[in-house]
Amino acid sequence: MTLQRSSGILLHPTCLPGEFGIGDLGQAAYNFVDFLVESGQKFWQVLPLGPTGYEHSPYTMNYSAFAGNPLMISLEKLVSEGLLKSEELKPVAASEKGAYDRVNFDEVIPHKYEYLKLAFDRFRLTIKDRQNPELENFCQEQAWWLDDYVLFMSLLEVHNGQAWNYWEKAIARREPQAIKEQKSALKDLILYHQFLQFKFFEQWKALRKYANEKNIQIIGDVSIYVCHNSADVWANQENFALDPETLESAWMAGVPPDYFSETGQLWGNPVYNWEHLQSTNYAWWIDRFKATLQYVDIVRIDHFRGFEAFWRIPAGETTGLKGEWIKAPGEDFFEKLGKALGDLPVLAEDLGIITPEVEELRDRFNFPGMRILMFAFADDSTNPYLPHNYIPNSVVYPGTHDNDTIIGWWEKASDKEKLYIAEYLGYSHYQEIKEINWVFIRMALASVSNLAIIALQDVLGLDNRARMNDPSVNAGNWRWRFTSSDLLSEELSDRLRKTTQLYNR
View 1 (cartoon, one colour):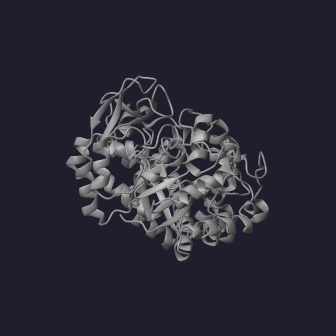
View 2 (tube, one colour; view 1 turned 90 degrees about the horizontal axis):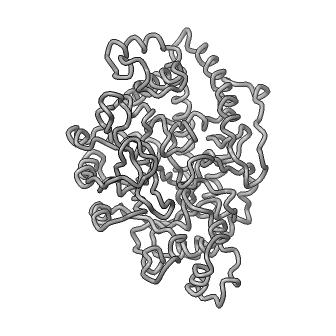
View 3 (tube, one colour; view 1 turned 90 degrees about the vertical axis):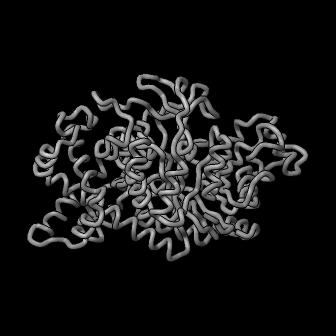
């Protein structure tokens, strides 16, 4: 994939302003697209869009790699369809108005689902006497993943969230007669979950169309692993390394000690049974990319190195220390994926412990890799994250959703790093540096990387209270949001556009 010289903004939809405690696909999302256009940007990067579970991570706690998150459904759009009444809607008060609000999932989830269930009840009345052709078409077109997902979510609900491998044995092991009986018994719940996906797809499709018509492309994210307690694992058990007796993960995913943690990271997701996947010509993975490309224009592959070799940790471990590297069939996989899908619009998240073999796999398929400015100033001039070491076929970020904000990082940076930055940029001392976030934005935009992506928090000049995720901490991530589109001011837009144009993006 070859990128044109351009730039964009990283912002997950849940971070947008909204009356109901969490960002959604309503007017604020359209306002954000307008801000991108007015600011001279060409891309909007989002995190995985699926329905999240425990601790709300869109990467490790997704109930499906194919479905959309119902919490992003705009209630106001349901009002415009007559499924809700505006006077019924009670807002969720922001914990802090302005730039530093946090999603209170414990409050937001029951509040929002109450309205979604009410909208569904009214929708069901409209299809009592006559079918809804749009819903029927959606269910038929998406049946290849939707049927398993809606049954899984219905079963999860009647089992009060209990992991699928603890359900009745016949259901856990998907015996055909048991599945048939459950589909019949749970048909109302199944219809409800079909409705939620129908509305998510409808709203996301309209938003993406709006963005594309204004020459804004969406960069989406494929997390390499999926949650054990998900429709993906339950419906495709042979694709994963599971204990044949307990159906728990026999091996868990993670990484060895790295920049973020001295004991490594234990993600807990099951690793893949690549031998079986290879025997199917990677059918499940190809379906997953097809599904993702229904949502987005370009796919960023999270933890790309796991396609060359992955860190496998035995079940029962509590850290990432006692793992081992296992070879993965990356080259064969991407060959087959390319044959199935044609030119692959893929970006490779090639961070972490990167070997020559990983670089060779990335370059073999011409996938742009990532450069993080925040990592650039820790050692010497050979650091690959310093701008003079970039190549055009790459994507530069001041920092990603996993990092501090630039201002937050600057507040913690060592004198050595600050002095290096000052010397690198021609200042006599780092105390001369003002607005460090804009210094990093300019560095990114000025670099030779064809694509520059900037987190909105850095455009807004926010400190670490606006950090999205800290990989070394399990609890409390994925909650940042801002509460007013007024923060996306004309003055800010003008500044970003002029800086973008200055560097020919």
